[in-house]
Length: 309
Image (cartoon, rainbow, N blue to C red; front, side, top):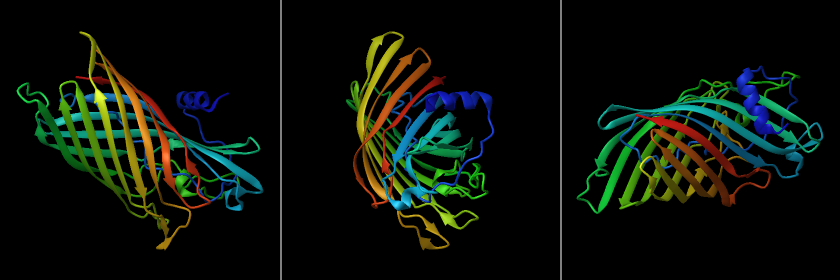
């Protein structure tokens, strides 16, 4: 059975994690996964469900092996329930509740599974400028600033059948608080638009004294609003994303084979039908700067549905 089908079956069954062998200490841990598309219905409340998949491919080195078995790929799956709600006319809040299944695949075909509720994230954005609905403006601007916090709600000390703990990057949670600062800007000209989103993520250490590296994520996307019919609109999206990750630390000492830089090409499409949004997107690596033993970032894909009112 394919991994994605297993994932959905496990969500339905709310299964317990099976016994697993120890993995090596090198994992993929990109900061992607927060992609929500353009969502030009900026004045609406939204309730959505999305599925995200990403992968990291390990090089064939001694550092990427466990009990003589070479590690091949780490797969990250997440099903997120999320909400955007306007507390006031100028303040919108976001909530993200993820359920994660992470799979570690070896060259001999053996897979290890970790699963559970991940770290819950809360964000708030304040509207600085909003000319989106002003028909007198040829160029219309929308600008939000704000931030958020990621709570240490996910499991981060899952162990194998030998009671050995998996490395933190492949755990479904971090065990630590994280703080996010965000700047979101949208420029529109008729049916064309361009969105930029810059985030800085500051990580704290968990009780094991492991601290994920701070990160900067900057993205830009061009889009076009195509009104197919009175009830259907299509929004094709094309852009890119840059990610910079500092190295992790443990007990204050730098962890080698962590951190790095990525540039990804983003493409997607949002389909609007009455009060529903259907989303499809992919992010594909074009540039990466990593240590030799680090896994390379693979494609990220996602789909989702949201209801607005």
